Image 1 (tube, rainbow, N blue to C red):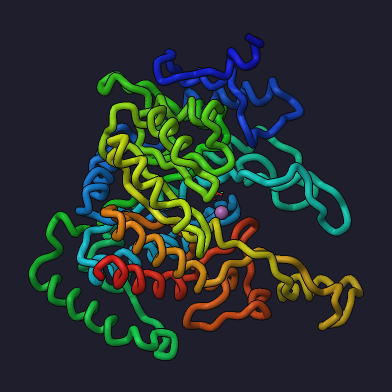
Image 2: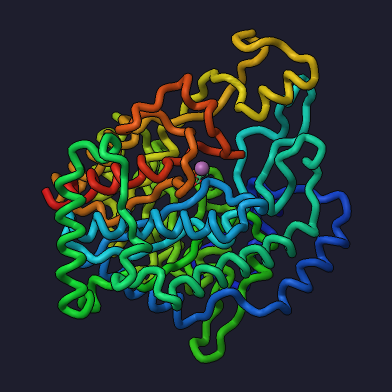
Length: 476
Ligand code: PEP
Ligand code: CO
């Protein structure tokens, strides 16, 4: 046997260690110019205090087990890629507020307790389709997320100091989340934090429901608060476990539990581009005790899923595995029923989540942002309306996102399963990155406030509207 393929055969029976992925092919890893500097930074990370503790991780796993049984609903959301520059109180608060507001609407309308899981405090690394891209006529390495390099074309070299920067910014973000929660941000006795105000036009036909939610909240406050199973007082963190040396450095052996945990987040997931059966990412994930997510795209076959399930969840542990499907509108029917059947036949008590974002991306032309346009003018650039003043952006249509959610929810129901979770890219800021929704944002309007360095996010108004629709969908 050729030694390379011999190396690639790992099975759940081979011994695992936080480093056992190292001999296997690892997709999407950056190449650093100075490997010794990376080693030094990783050694420092290994000694730093963990961001979360094993008890919290186990608690989330128990909640996810309840969600898989149909007793709770998981709401996972946040930026596609967190930017270091967005590690700011107001941005974190707005994101948290929109998640909690969505949760309130889903709890109210869907009659179910909601688990909050942010794509936050560590969502800094991105898988990319190419190695390079052209910016302003120049070929530069792709942007891989602030963990690795910078979005500005002159900062594209992978820089190991960013690994430490990511740790400290994740710590600051998580500290702020914890302080907000401890300080009563999510407490229903502080309705000002829940401010569901929407302009009358924006709220449209949801005005009546909003009034009902407000009345229910008044009533609950008079009763002394929500019962435990509907309480909103937890905020968990998650990110894609992409950069394996970094994730390994955040992995700790916890003697009380006798297991290794990734204590850089409560939950980590493996992406569509790194889930090769014999690859390094699955090898790393199979050994950590955290609840984990597996992205499942339209190319997933029942056979591949069967092997992935047996690697990642050999003990068939409730709450361990969340399957996050991301097919694209109109594509679930051809794939999902057989996958539902596979998980059931193999006896894995998975939680099914729907990510209606990543299968629905489109590239369109829009104008420059107001800032870019001003720059163009300062530099003596072209006049408004000139085709040189256009740029390509990625967008997603609210209608496609909703369609995929509806199709997936319906297919689960038809096959005796349940969509118990949703996964969104969203922000609390008034960005213009996805089209549609009640605001009626069109492609020409995307230029107004397109801020994402990566994929397009739902803004607050679009997120709340989506939450109304999800509540309806899961109650039906
Ligand atoms: C993501 O969730 O940001 C992502 C890249 O998703 P996927 O792996 O499903 O493409
Ligand atoms: Co994304």
